[in-house]
Length: 538
RNA sequence: GCGCUCGUAGCUCAGCUGGAUAGAGCACUGGUUUGCGGUACCAGAGGUCACAGGUUCGACUCCUGUCGGGCGCACCA
Image 1 (tube, rainbow, N blue to C red):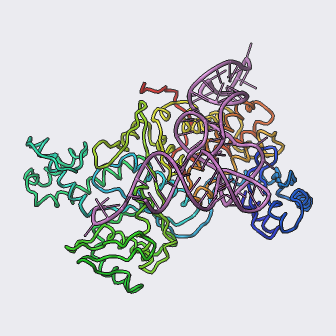
Image 2 (image 1 turned 90 degrees about the vertical axis):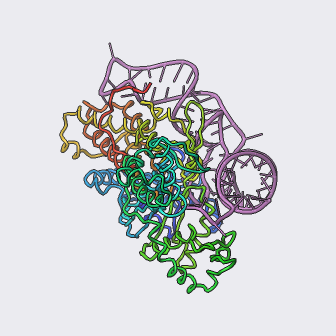
Image 3 (image 1 turned 90 degrees about the horizontal axis):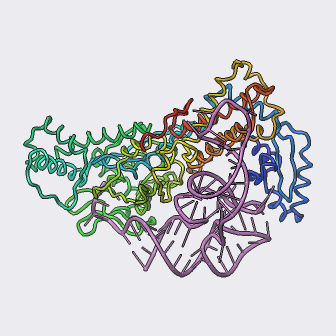
């Protein structure tokens, strides 16, 4: 809709035109301040320019009215245009708000270490990534969701040690001394028991076998992680294991040197990457004195592999505490001979939960973690997805669980679901057939209905905007507003038994379509009825 | 100390590449149809957009500085 208007104006004015939503609904559907920018070149008052522009439109299929107001140019779409668009949407529901973008995108997200279940911080990145993924798919992009499994390095060793310590204390009944850092949590119990079946109890007292134990256990942890993600409706297309990458290190290093002979150098018996020359704060060690590659080396190989697989665009979603890591990876990408502008790293900020007014901070290593699965159990996957998708991902977020357990309008996910369910109820109450409803024409609507229809048809613009700006919260914001329009309309306007019944039901079908598609893009299934159960928790 | 980031209503947050009177939800106060789910709707109150400069027709938005919060500054991932 907006695209149509936008291209029409581009044609007419010979330039891109800023289209915005008028401050006041009564001004029309779209507005542009173009007269202000023309004022300087034309040396005329914007008010006069706007008047001239407006009168130059004449009869038009798309607009019913083009009006100059204080230098702004306000457009009102014609009823015919809206009616036809709505009909098309209802008849092609699967294609509603879709586009045919073609680019291949690789989206890497979550990538949490396979050393324990996901915590609430991971959930935010997961929801953000998956929402972007769904938006991109809908827009036609050929996008791949990938999980990078850090199954090498110290944290894997620590996993083996942690299981053994857990088993020795809790299963073998030994007194054990815990080191400074180790993993803890219920999940260790299952892993320890599994290990007994697989290896026998002896393994817990044989430090030389802890590595073996860990490599076995990380698969079990990945099962827990993917299951938790599945409960959130999040699925990955591909998994890449860090441990599989290092064998490629020599080749990748040579590749960087080929691009720039100074990319890699030796100093103090270590191998360094000259990342400072590419905008990093310092050069970084990639291979230690003892020959073990650093984490960065793995990431360099990984990014090389990504680029060799050949996508048009690469997106990473990282925890915001890793933001300092971005320059060195970009530097490596440049040394590999690729354009680091094709790699975009988005950040997912900290989450703090409130419960009983007490904020608690989470730290994966330090025990007191809030498990994602616990929160899903408490407020449900839909509410969790909604709250995380609702806030800009790169700013810290604090929220209170209580708000999302309520079954009334103070809970936004409930409010939107209720709007959808209301429409279904009303449809089931009507005696009109689907054909009768569909054949009604959406013209001569009163103002409220007109606004509601316009709002409902705005979804395509929102989807495009939410993805291209990577600001997924625009989608839930829109759905909240649309649900509010619906509730207001429902309250104000009687539908069943009126002369306009068919017409208004058709309008509601459009609203329901937008709500349903919008929710599905957030990984949430629209409900057709609301259960009358009151909050059982309290 | 350096870098990144944030500072908008009592609280949680929007505010699109600068544009019309700075918005929403929660909380608060007061109302609502002898009708489709009142699990809803309406209204009221609530703001020095952290502060100070600058850029311009126009700044919450861009620039500089100050203050305050968060994060990062590994041969850990």
